[in-house]
Amino acid sequence: MIPSLIRSTTATLLVCSVACGPAGDQVPKQKGSEPTTMDHHSHARPDDARITHLDLDLSVDMEARRISGTALYKVESKSDRIIFDTDGLTIERVFLGDGSDAQYTMGDSSMLGRSLEVRITPETKEVGVVYHTGDRAKALQWLRPGQTTDREFPFLFTQGEAILTRTWIPIQDSPGIRFTYSANVTVPKELMAVMSATNPTEHSADGTYSFRMDNPIPAYLIALAVGDIVFESTGSRTGVYAERSMVKKAAWEFADMEKMLEAAETLYGPYRWGRYDLIVLPPSFPFGGMENPRLTFATPTIIAGDRSLTAVVAHELAHSWSGNLVTNATWNDFWLNEGFTVYFERRICEALYGVPYVDMLGVIGAQDLKATMEKLTRDGQPEDTRLYLDLDGRNPDDGMTDVAYEKGCAMLRTLEALATRPVFDAFLRNYFDTYAFQSMTTEHFITHLQEHLLTPNGLSFDVNAWTEGEGLPANAVMPTSDRFDLVEKQIARWTLRNTGR
Image (cartoon, rainbow, N blue to C red; front, side):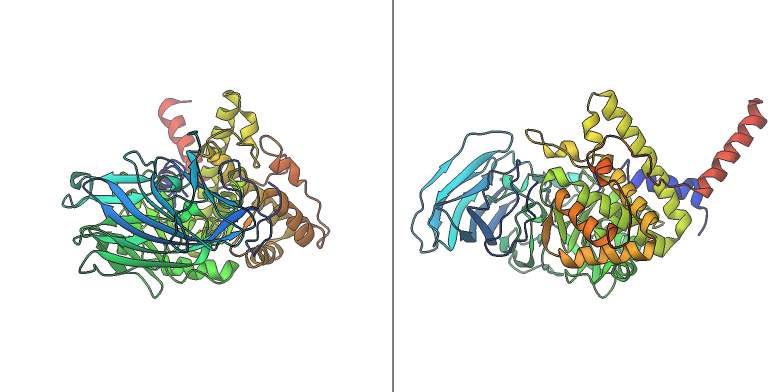
């Protein structure tokens, strides 16, 4: 995710306009009965019972602003209960695979919503829930026609990260719990539906669409968008969705998507999700981008008309490895998603646009990190300048700061400088291959780092100074930019000439 246009879009625009010139516990492996990591931000108890597949049959009412239907789960159980997360949902019925009603209870409301506890047996294979969303579902953004670009039809998009998918689907809403999903979604026949799954490229005649995600993903990566959107190809595996008046502009702006995908594969191995498409959402989308598998959700503010803001796309594409393929097991481990992705994003941009461009991105990111750390310390939260956080009892969004992104990237840059780039690249590729479609804790990553990079190469590196220590360690390798240095010299000369100072 790009959480703020300050860190991404505006920063990249500054680069191009000023200086470019022309030109937890145990690692959850999701295999059978192996243990999973406890997550303070979910009611689920995956060691008792967890879902392995979700089948949705939903109807989207754009006028009533309601999603209703049935969620059917395949489950693995060693217990007499399975617990789901919900928030603001109305549960109409719960049933078992044979169609019989299941006994269930709802927990008290809290920051985490309400638990839905269903009585099952260790032999239970399927559980179903009939439900509808409430009028304040935090994951659902309903737009009137006047709030869209074309101003003719309403629009809906979802945003599940970090713990909001539970507001439109009863789900085990933890990044450490992965499952496949399929969906049938009915929308008004004038509109198209797309999801983080296999997608249509044409409107259906009756407004019914079917989707499939065969790779296991965590709940926060389930995504849906509904609107009068159309598709334009940008390559054999890439394309863009957008409103009709926007799609040609978007396809031109993101013409490098296929090249980015190829560059990423050259660095860290095959793209394992089939297609990589992007949807340009209406301006109210509150992020620069969101890495929903197979379909990045993006803000239209990155369509600058000169392809200068495509680092955002590189970032979300990089998540197809760091975040979607290997996922933070809990939100305390968020840096494992974003620090890796910023590093990977800049390697993609370096391959396409050169070292000077990436140096400028790095300097701006370092400036953002410095400002964020100073503010956290000033506000009495220096512990939030650590990579590994303790967010128990807090909103996981509190951990989505430049620390996870830029300090995490700085740690990887420092490791690269220590190990040499070829050695570090081999390590990262092996990491993605080894833990593909699994979740990762900070503790387990440190063990893997020691066993597969540091010890074999005789390297000394104080990992705890980065993950548990506040601020930046003294050995941090930070970016510099010759182009920015030239700009600063010109500013100094102008100031001297015009003010005498």
